[in-house]
Image (cartoon, rainbow, N blue to C red; front, side, top):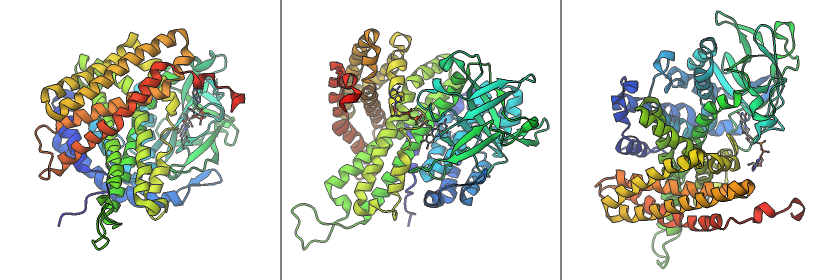
Length: 605
Ligand SMILES: Cc1cc2nc3c(=O)[nH]c(=O)nc-3n(C[C@H](O)[C@H](O)[C@H](O)COP(=O)(O)OP(=O)(O)OC[C@H]3O[C@@H](n4cnc5c(N)ncnc54)[C@H](O)[C@@H]3O)c2cc1C
């Protein structure tokens, strides 16, 4: 008897997306990825699936029930988190997508994200530690001096140091222009930092020899706003020239935030420069400037863009595992009979009811659509890294415009998938006896961190689609329309879907023009529509992803003989028939440039 399919993630779906659709193996004919092959890629994914299932999934609930505790200056976590991360690092996964010259595996980014999807689905809060660490290391590889790289990045890749990103402050979340953490220059070229950070994930724990904080701060006299922000490495322990740990730095956790989900990722309030430690006999957290003064936010975007894709993938993975678990439950639970059936007949499983199938199909269409989008974005990263100059430029242009969508759409709709998973289980879904309620709570973070939904919307409409006089939008719509042309050529259902997607694409182009015109006279009126615009663009992009998947099935027969293909076709059909038409209302609202929210006043609430 074959083993039960995994409820963490679907390997069959990943294989289809990676190999049948994105042809990841072909990347290995490029020089950059010449050391890899389909076999090595599959082997790393196999390993990730095994580690995620064996070491990450089992403590997902325990970490949720056993919140991190601050004891003195130290944070206590359940030991299983450290054990899982030790296994992760031993498998060389921290540097899996980094260049071999810095000690990485130089795996195609698409394959790397497929690996990470297993860890995010199995246990998002344990997997958040390496997400932050790799993002931190990649930023330093892009902008740090060789000395900073040697001192901090190498131990991060080896799994000895962990990283954080310290942007937010109590008064500055969405708008980092208002940060007040101060960095005073010292004669030896270092800086001393003073201030209060807020919400910092993984800010303290005993799982690593050292913690490398990347901190945004302002140097006195620097320009106001974001143009005066600089970036610093602030290690928990100073590192001596020979790599050994030196004095304890003056960065201390003074409180923890207690959250509704993601509880295994400790969330901290670091205080810098309070004199709780006095490195070099002086209060002030020692910091090392990354790059040049006042360019910190630009550099931070290296990490934030990567993290945004990671957040989108995390949201997708949590949605995906919730879908698989609700499907397994629905197949197993007898309840009632089909409408009109005699009470003498046996009960049917929940999947015997069309409304339950609706909830399962909705989840399937969201999570498989979102997984396709995040992997497609990863494939664009690979084009940037390893393609011809034309492929790299096209990849970058498209990635710029897709990143806010890839962050926000899964965060909204795979969260909704988790809500549907709870609903599929009925009363059981509302109890802690089943995982789906935790998945919902965990996933609720994703529309908030790494730039809220509203901030992503402003980024998409206010910057990305209008960039280069509309070149951003064209980068996207050209690709969408090219897929539609392939759909036309295929005929049948793909051609029908292509007509729908093309019509949606034309709506998006027209409405972007209307909003751009509005924005040139009245920017707040344009941005008041940004969230609806993001949602409309997101639905269109996912419909495009479904058309792509349909085409990737080729001439597979979508019936009993091939249930994978049959399921894909039904999920594509569901999305195109039940979801994409909801864009009509969004486009109508956008066309009307409605001012209801803009003109509403505080005192009228
Ligand atoms: C669990 C967790 C982990 C986190 N981890 C980190 C971390 O590791 N490092 C880090 O630096 N930060 C971290 N954050 C902080 C996170 O990035 C911020 O919470 C987020 O950016 C929002 O900032 P805020 O909480 O101050 O909300 P606010 O900025 O006050 O926003 C509140 C609401 O107002 C809206 N809003 C705000 N400004 C505007 C505007 N100009 N236009 C339209 N709408 C607006 C927002 O969209 C949101 O809905 C974390 C947060 C949480 C909850």
